[in-house]
Amino acid sequence: MTRRLTVAQAVVAFLQAQYSSRDSQEHRFIEGCFGIFGHGNVAGMGQALEQNPGLRYYLCRNEQAMVHTAAAFAKTSFRLRALACTTSIGPGATNMLTGAAAATINRVPVLLLPGDIFARRNVAPVLQQLESPSTQDISVNDCFKPVSRYWDRIQRPEQMLTSLPEAMRVLTSPAETGAVTLSLPQDVQAEAFDFPEEFFRKRVWIIPRARCDKELLSQAAALIRQAKKPLIVAGGGVLYSEASRALANFAEATGIPVCETQAGKGSLPYDHPQQLGAVGVTGTPGANIAAREADLVIGVGTRYSDFTSASKTAFQNPGVRFISINVAEFDAYKHAALPLTGDARATLEELQSAAAGYQVEKTYAVRIATFRSDWEKEVDRIYSTRKLRPSLRAKSSAPSTPSPNPPTSSFAPLAAFPAICTNSGAPANPAATTWNTAIPAWVTKLPAASAQKMANPNREIYVMVGDGSYLMMAQEIVTLAPGRRQTQHRPPRQSRLLQHRRPKPRVRQRRHGH
Image (spheres, rainbow, N blue to C red):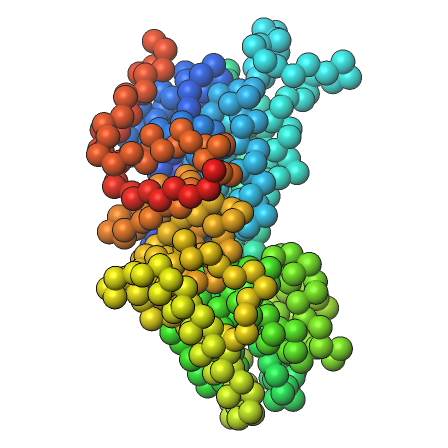
């Protein structure tokens, strides 16, 4: 049996039937679609979204912001759910490039559906079409190739039968995920085709917990038993694999201290005895001292960016060795590490069994406790400077000696916030070091606040806005505005796509910076 649909209608129907599953827990994978409409997608994706309300449509004010929001939603959902983004051709499409690059760099899934120039070419050049004297087979959407984990241009309807499943494979892959771009020429979007009914049946994409090699696991256990000053660096992969409990168990069993990257904020509760806080450029003194002296560094779900490794200067022990637990082989081999390529939670559980009986030396454990105590006193001093009410002074954790980049006292109230969003730059440093959180809730950029609330409707979100995202994306405050009924978005007469009338969730905003 077949179903006659336009390409755009087929895209929407297909996405609506895609689910992810891990540990027998199913989730609708594509939860909705952001869109800004114009020539290139209004008569295709616009009509399809209006006719199929099962895939919820969200209005954003800027194409770059919609991708940042989609990426933050996927991150907050531990990559088990994602959002799609559709735009017109030309600048509407290229505005998404920055967001696409960030999503691919940070290994989070977003589906981009930019409009593209006419496949049949006889009407070229269309408004703002890139023309090349050497080829007609190029458009501005070719810019997405280097920043996408998967890229395709759909020239014929039947190509969707192979392209969409491949896009889903990449989006749901823990190792390969990132931005996926399907360029949709505006005439092809509206072209009808008899799609097989099977194409639209529910499909569940199993996200496996891959196990690492047993021999490498044994070698890792041997390195741990030899270590005098081991240290764990917890990255975003801990959160994505929901491995926080496994990490806590491993740290408690071995006594190995844990520091965290910005992406791994909240991997371990702030009051855990082995928690040293952030490491690297925005790190706490104790975490950075432990990193400098460590003879064994166990990276869990981290890609060792320059902020984490202080541009490869953080780990200075001449005999330091690395063990890397990562689902992506590419990241597992960084720093010449012993690669334990596998799921973070499964690998930590197996490594704990393999290294059973190991405990750090008592002198090292006492030093780690001193780091925590000294930093706790420093954070309390900062809070006292602000004269906060006792109810806002959350108990803090951490390490010793004056920080080379001490957090400003204006960020002291962060300790009381259940979840925050900051922009990159100045707010990131104090948020990384003095915000005490027991939950994974660290995202950046103003649009991420929308994503936090979409993914966790019952969580209270606070937004700190510095000059970076505010100057670039001040218009997103309109998207976040509490209780505001937004103007309905109506594309031209070919189609009427109405903004969903449900009011936007309340999001508290804190502005900081210029």
